[in-house]
Image 1 (cartoon, helix red, strand yellow):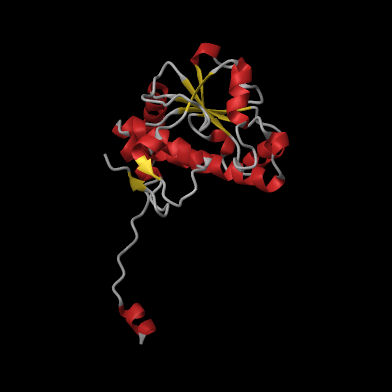
Image 2: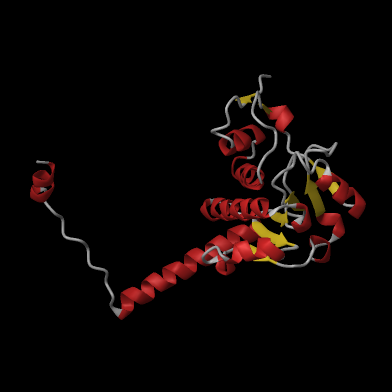
Length: 228
């Protein structure tokens, strides 16, 4: 009976795609305008670096996970009305191979990839390494700064590695204001690359760390807004 009902269900004619030269040209122009608008918005936003310079510190499973987190970050940025300009630095080895296996990776908008370290790409005084071990709490995002997210998967095993790297390089450090805005409860305090990325992109939209953090961690058991 279910099959009969489906068979008797009225069918609406599928719209035919206009393939005339004018229609094709119009769709192409709309695509170009959309692309240019996105790139303009990204250029007006903060610059975020994902530091992939820990290739030798991770196993193959962790490198694959990092590549997936980077892919998630791209999706977050692409969907955002306030995207960032993103650079993947020190990309090589298995991580590069994993990224190249992602369809369209080399065509990602506002996502540049380089084998160079961020120290060779940006002014040293503009760099801010985001690390939970920093004594400094980030308050605002500045378009004059370059915010670095450490491309590490198992942060419990590699404790303090990003902070110590930044200190050795003589660059500024800061941490997200998690302790000020949310109570993590029994949830792990270790955030993935894409969660940190989403908090930063969210903040540019809402200008509120509590809202930016909660919307990035909706499924985390026990995470609550901290009471005043």
